[in-house]
Amino acid sequence: MNALTLPDVAAQASRQTLPLDWVGMCGIATPVLIDGQRLSALADAGVSLDDGEARGIHMSRLYLALELLEETALSPALLRRILQQFLDSHEGLSHAASLSVHTDLLLKRPALISPLVGWKSYPVSIEAHLKNKMFHVELKIQIAYSSTCPCSAALARQLIQQQFVDDFANKKLEHAEILSWLGSSNGIVATPHSQRSTATLTLRLNANANELPLLSLINEAEAALGTAVQTAVKRADEQAFALANGQNLMFCEDAARRLSTALSRSPDIVALDVRVVHAESLHAHDAVAQSRWTRGAS
Image (cartoon, rainbow, N blue to C red; front, side, top):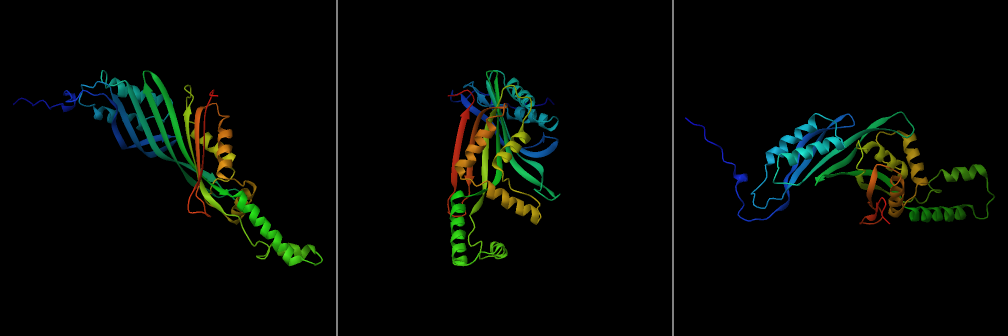
């Protein structure tokens, strides 16, 4: 009995002659190796369908090419290799290929004062594109931090001043009494509002980049903000965090400018988009600021 040849419907001619910009798969489960960690990720893989007469692409070939993600640390070179395999397996059909990897990078972060450490999650996306032999990589990183409103802090200080006047009017000032007052609820009659905030960094890497500088970029961003959210803490750490917030009062505009300026010093970045969101505790809406630049652009 002769084996039947399985039909290749994708190779049949299309009923409509029309090229397509992108065809592929989204949300493919895959492990990836980043900074020595084996992480669970979701990948989006696709190519252009430039031959308008072809009915479809060979999606299984894209899927099989992703096996390279299991074996080698993620890098620009690996991403380019996978994209080239996408195109080689679709010769005559496609001239452009893309791959996106979405995962959560886990970093162990120390407490501010005590010896405690804890894990913190950073959502990241790595996008690679190859078209007409032009290759580039973009990174998207989300960083959580705390932001204390400068206006609210000024208003709180004013109320504390007024309370001091009310409590010590026409009184002889004694050091011990003032110290006691400062440590009481009478002294701190108002506190500024702060909120958990998020910075989303979207950046294009230099074409000569050999690595994905995720850790260094995260460290630079958190240093610029000064108030990264914490993991495990003791009271001394919480007090140090309160101090950091008091010394780093910021509107969303301030945060966006800090990040944009700090990351402009990185030689790995040729273009940057910064978007910060302060999830207001005063209002029911968010405060948002955004900044963009491209190296060399006027």
